[in-house]
Length: 294
Image (cartoon, rainbow, N blue to C red; front, side, top):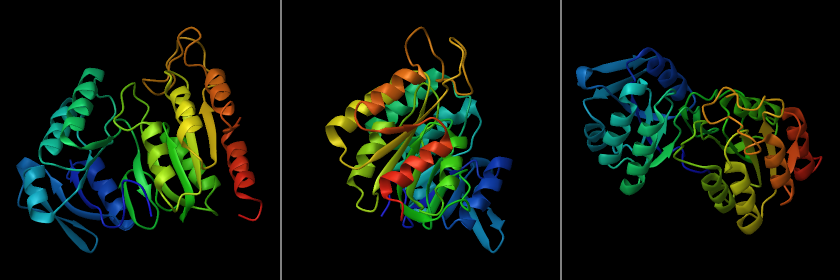
């Protein structure tokens, strides 16, 4: 099985006809994603050819859902239009919206993530690489050729570290990998993914990648203590980050004693999570938890 995204998912791409949308739609199709249409009001009624497949363009998400039964969308639109794109998707009844766009104003992210919850739409992101269920579907920009289907579930704030752990553990493979994004406000949290992986019968172990800033990892540790019975291995990025400086992600900033990598590591280790000091050590801890013969 998988979480959030399967081979049955029917995917729209908002912004498919732009440069990034075109490039990554082609990669999603190559990975097996069932991309059923793009959305661009100015190009509605056209088809876009991707190798041996023609993908129709619709004038709205609602039109795309009516014509195809789509239940997921990937958002590749500029920051100024991201809020409107997500609200449109939520109003149309989409179940899953994967928001790749970075640089979205925080007040816009607060508005559309809150609104999406009222409409029953799950948001992945913003400022994220998306999610992949290897061998089934890929919604976003995660490379599909660095791993295989397997028994590890991965949730990460960092796109780059998502890719690295996928590669390091490629011989075992993954059920689903979710890049939740590193902005201060995201639609799906570590805890959401922990709960989903806990309920997924094909996920045997969970890898949690966090980073400095905020208290998401401490809250995840409390959730693991109370609700997660599967083994969890973690990695926290940012041990050498200077205080008060944002490191890459808008949410990755340490202020005083809050949000440090050490505090997050201690909270996770206190509930039995093995925390690696490097991605490679984290992968080694996974192998140890699964058994040397994994």
